[in-house]
Length: 455
Image (cartoon, rainbow, N blue to C red; front, top):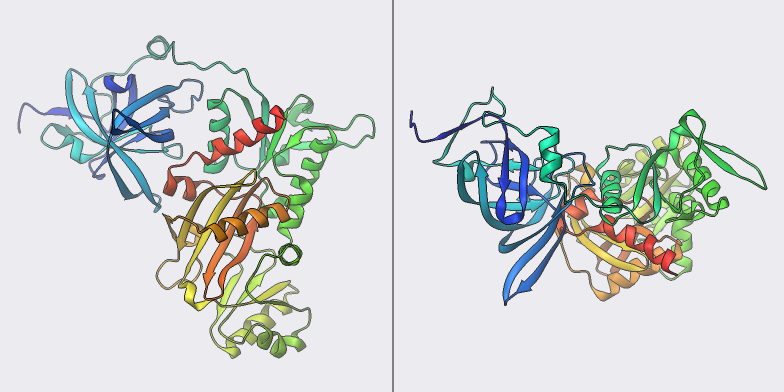
């Protein structure tokens, strides 16, 4: 065994002096090819005619108060498939890594690792020829105490001086909710996660109230960001209306969320505002099945449950017989359904345009997995960056405005007739689109709240 190699455990502390990071815990993973560093607010820029990138990092897991602002020369941009299956474009930098008494230059990609257990992943390319790993051990080169970390980062703690913002949602561990909390903290706001199921309200004409677990009264919030799951729409919107009655600014109103969840009504509303959609039929009786199929141009066609979400409750019927069977099966369950023409030329792809405060802040193309026609990321689809056409941007902005949504995920499909709108989502997920575009969309949502208060 070579005696000049460093022996590391599966977890070790290291530092990046050129980035101003004195201590960060890394996962040592010989199964990963490249190293990755947690980064948010990533933005490329020119420095003396060279490409550089600036980014922020919370170097200590679960500590959003400690922030380091970093800059590094940009080496490359690369498409990387993450461990969760997302294809994302990442910026690549080179910098010196210090472990124990040894220092050498490594290459790293920048990505948001909030959903991971470690802010740093040390891959085998950075370890090659220098390191041996004992996976049964940890911190063979020592680890800093809590007090040591406080001393090291005493000048990196951000002070809050902004708004008091609540994220009204169900799961604090969900990527989107964590990112919104993080983005608010990064911009100096006091962020609180409010679990929908632990809120209850007092209806009173003079003094409406919302109480939280243990009887705490939620009476001093400046703004609320509703992130309401479809299964809890009724109660989540009731709480949002109550906050509105208490004169709290809500990033999406209860009325806008409610109408966006009614797929039939929302399609009628969009058509009323001049937004084109695939030819769609709706009926309440199985006796109308034959004419319903003809109405949308025959098979193949799409059958959608009105209450479906994330691609669930969406079926492709390739023949008339299959369409009749699916429609009648859904009707026998008293389920409300839409029947929609199948856009074959889309080839399993659609566009997700993320609209915040009347602007398209990011866009991706989602492509269905092999053998699948639904492009939803949750159904195994992959995301890649695209540049939407001016017409597609116009449709997305018009759709969000028609639905009165300040934040919306607008799904568009490219057809031989031009772009057609599929759906408008009032609580769009951030993981796929932030991962693919490296854009701080959560930060854009916080900026929309700030803009309202500046008005």
